[in-house]
Length: 185
Length: 89
Image (tube, rainbow over all chains, first blue to last red; front, side, top):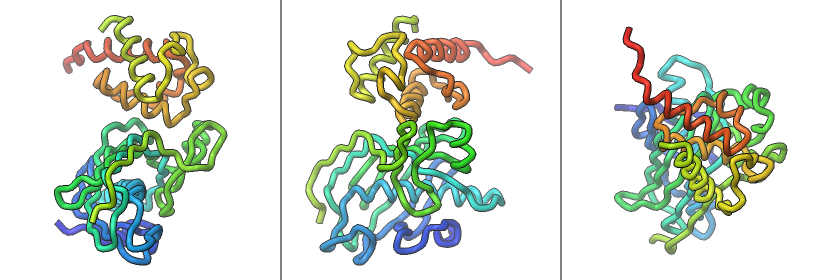
């Protein structure tokens, strides 16, 4: 099945569009492919921290939202990355030239809030796992209904991170990070 | 699941997910003020509660929760609802 190019459905643009293509999409799951390229954001000395996985996860979920919005005939979607949790990194870095798959599956959703369990892999090798929590819909409307939820980063802006501590917007929110392994060659 | 079992399960979730000291958790403990959780923690907790109840807790209901005992009441209610067979049409 052919999927639309990501730059047709996502507002992200290079260099912050980190994913190459949408390769699979179901109602509650998505798979995208990405290639680590020289000159890409956060790439230094031919490698990038595997923490980039969190941005891959966020963009893959955004791709799922955008694809479903387009399939349903809807207009542009809005969304917000609220946070990441239980992120486990099996390698410390990815290297330029690495081709990776990003798979995210919805594990919980209620109203506009959903959490996706995500896996970053290279072939059969699991490089990173974690859960990302996202808000589907217009962040301004949700913030108006829930004053505590006023921050986060816009899924459609190509940035990630966001703190949801009541009344303290700002720094990225990442809970329970486990780093292990050395740079994969 | 008895009410005491529900309470113990919730305490277990709070300890495991948010690295709280079980001695600091009481039924009347307020989630934000006493246990220092925030709204993202609350979402993570509802994901865990989904594992307990098998039901997706509505965000509007979740917003009304203030204390550990509120969670126990919610889970008890959800489990009771889950055990009632759906009405035949």
